[in-house]
Image 1 (cartoon, rainbow, N blue to C red):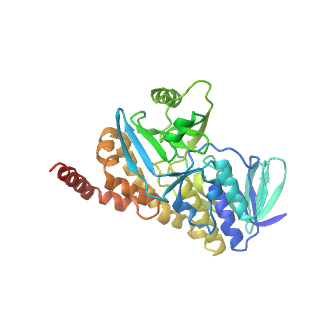
Image 2: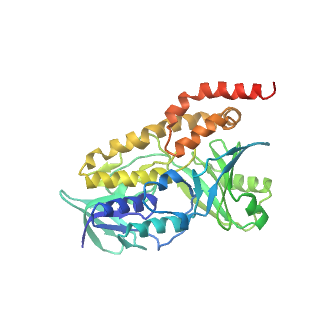
Image 3: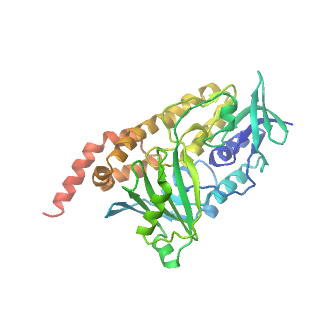
Length: 371
C-alpha cells in the first residue's frame, strides 16, 4: 500500500492540502482519527477570503453571514459594521467534511496513527491497529499536539492558550437577535475574550485566553449569567489555541506541519481557519513543485511574519484592555483595517503603522460632528 502523500488529520488544513495535491495529480490518503463527520469544538467564524482559494461554493455549509459586531468592555458597548462578504459562520463537522469530500481523495476515518518513520527516499505512517502506509511525503494536520511532529522530533515547546465553548440552544427571539451579528466582550479575562457567534439553530458561546487561564469555566458561566443566558446543565467543550510565536520548525525530511500543528493561530483574534487553509495550500504546492525545502520560509513570509506583528499588538491590547477598547475597538478606521486583514487585503504591520493617522482621523470626525 503506497501513496504520494499521506495527510494525518481531516480538518481545514489537511483537507485543503488534499484538495490541491489531488488537483495537481498526486495520489493522496487522508487519515482521520475520528469517524466523519465529527464534531470539532471551534467558534468557526470563517473569513470569506479563505474560501476564495477554491473554485466552488461553500453555501451549503454556511450557517450565517455576519454584518455587525458588538464589542463590550464592562458596561460599555459599541457596534461596528462588517463589510458584506467578509465573515461567515459554520459548524466544523459540516465544513470540514464538505471540504474533505470535495478533495475526492482516499480517506481512512476512525483510524489513529502511532508514529511516522523516516527513511532516505520514503516515509512510513504506522497506525495504532498495526497497519503501515508507505508514502513519499507526510503532512501533519493533526492539531496542536501533533503526533506527526513529535514522532520526527519536531518539538516546538510552545505554550498554548485554551478555549471553552458551549453550543447553546436559546429561544427564537434571542437567536433572531444574533441572526447576522456577533458579540465580543473584553475585560472578563486578562489575556482573552468572551464571544457569542450565531449558528443556524443555536449560539456558539465561548471564552478563550492566549495564556492558559485557570478560571475559564467560572468566568464563562459568570459572563453568561450577566447576559441572561442559561447556564444550568450546559456541556462545555475545550480546545487548545496554538498561537503563533515565531518558531518555524515546521518541516523535516519530507514531513510538513500545517494549520494548528504548525501553531498558526492569530494571537490577537484566535482565528485559525484562514491560516490553516493557506498553509495546506502552500504545503501542497511545495510538494508538487519539488520545492519542499522552501516550505518553512514560505510560511514565514506569507503567514508567520505578520502574525508576529499580531502578537506585538495582542501583548499590548490584552495588557491594556480599557485603553484598547476606547482607542482601538471604537475607532472605525482601525476596525476597517482589521476587516481588511481577515480579508487578505491588508497586514498587521501596515495597519499598526497607520494607527497614529487613524487616531487623528477619528478625533477630527468626532469634533466636526458637534460643530
